[in-house]
Length: 116
Image (cartoon, rainbow, N blue to C red; front, side, top):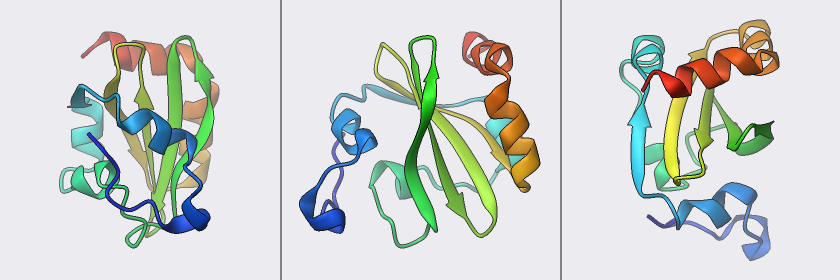
């Protein structure tokens, strides 16, 4: 997988854009599918920034996971890249407090990944 649009930031790649080339598989958790049933994965994997207010914002490490966030029309999309280079869409939140609570609960994040 490769980012199609790297022109932003004067050609400087983000943490996500450095990792995207290594992605072997894209997974949507059941919880994510419930949270965002009409989400188009290509908007993230194609590194299109046109549809998002913020995209590929690196948030933190949780175990071996690199956790990222994208924001589109007030919805926070949380996704991760694991050590097997799988892009895992974890959750989508319509409010910041729900997103913030999820991000602070590392056990919940790891549980979501274990359940795939």
